[in-house]
Image 1 (cartoon, helix red, strand yellow):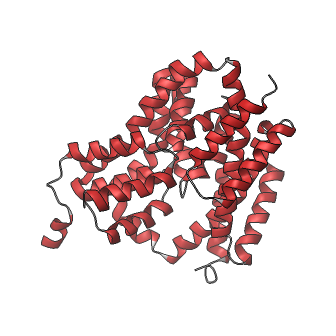
Image 2: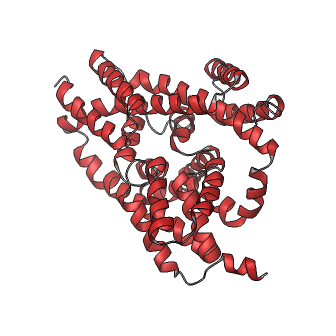
Length: 189
Length: 176
């Protein structure tokens, strides 16, 4: 029991957890993969809330779990520091800046600017740029994930099924997971 | 109003629950829910919102949920959609993190996640094609796509640089 109690250091205030993750949420651009190194620098380097080894464990869970990378790692760090209340403070910190900033854009700036010819020109260039970034992500994920013929064949089969049947992506994911369970059990690990 | 709020919550809950590994995993799910099933947005508006979500700080799917929620049902819609997309993380990691730690190290769970991630690659590839049909409309947008695809494959830097490049190229090449 004493060792378990020492896992949760209660000296950190909920306020400092909230502020730390507010800063991360408000100033880190580029989504999850850009935010994780900033969180690591903040909680392992600057504040020494968790060790590097603990942070690596947190990352393993973060990447195997549903949800956003930044949010998942923040909640786990909050929970380790102050239990459920700490997890909620961290979640609020990561999420609140997004909500405030995007609400301001959606409510004021976007309606004001969207018919402007230069803004239309910017989006004309942004759309293919976004698709290129998604394609790059698919390529990098493929190179990391599609190791061995099992996973390559599974990917091609599922792509074909998705194109032909138009079933919901969740169905494609579940079929993929179950196929992994059936066919990869020995080879993929 | 209550109906649309419920639909927003349920749609974004599904997006949150099946976005595994973060990042662009949410794109095919959001595309299916927001464009194909509910018809809340057309593909061009969806791409614009994803671009804005990339330009602004914070997790992309939370940014997109807030924006889409606001577009459909005002401030309440933005809060409900955001709550939906973060609900799975909150429940799983606040209440079940110890059990999940054990589960995730289980070989069966690893095989399931491996198969699921192969499916994810297929879905994201497919999303490139469906979204690309709206984004790439002429030789100039095709040029922007190819330029940014090649540079982003060669250099792994913050997506913000490529977003900025897309904006500048758009300003230069747009058929005014």
